[in-house]
Image (cartoon, rainbow, N blue to C red):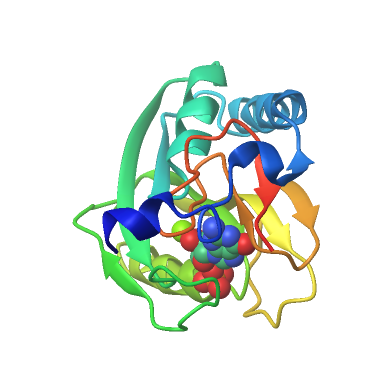
Amino acid sequence: MNDRAALNPDTFPEPSTLEVLILPHDLRKRVTQIAEAISHDYANEVVWLVGVLKGAFMLTSDLARNLTIPCQIHFVQASSYGSGKESSGQVQLDNTLDVSGQHVVLIEDIYDTGNTLKRVLRDLRQQNPASLEVCTLLDKQGSEKHPVEVKYLGFEIPKRFVVGYGLDYAERYRELPYIACLD
Ligand code: 5GP
Ligand code: MG
């Protein structure tokens, strides 16, 4: 993408013009509740938070700082979207972790088709973790989904294309402290 496209308001509208779906206050409240649930469920353990880059970086760090139990923080890199708004269905995974014998909470930004979660879960399961659960900030309603059991869920959202709080469009908007719609 050239510099002109990167600055074009038709391609990348000003954040202040976007429809806000979830406010910072509501994100904070829900993430704190999830951190409390994880702290409770893994009391006396060291939990491994495994975030899926890049979308889950903000959720992973906010969860970590609200835990009241010890944790390790790790990331795997998965991408299925490229720079468009529709899932390509092809998941690229870069995972050099070894989670064998660990209590793992896999952290994803959004459960849309479940392609990404299914792929990462398969990979992690093969390494025989002591336990493996899924946390996702958003669950997009109305998508055709691979069934995935989500233990810790932030919010159900309508079938919109959203950005912010880690989620991007062509690498933009990840820094927004709220979730907004781009469609
Ligand atoms: P899935 O594999 O479940 O179809 O999609 C999961 C991945 O697609 C997410 O990790 C996220 O990167 C991307 N994705 C799905 N829906 C959206 C959306 O509404 N906005 C953004 N920015 N990314 C999305
Ligand atoms: Mg993602």
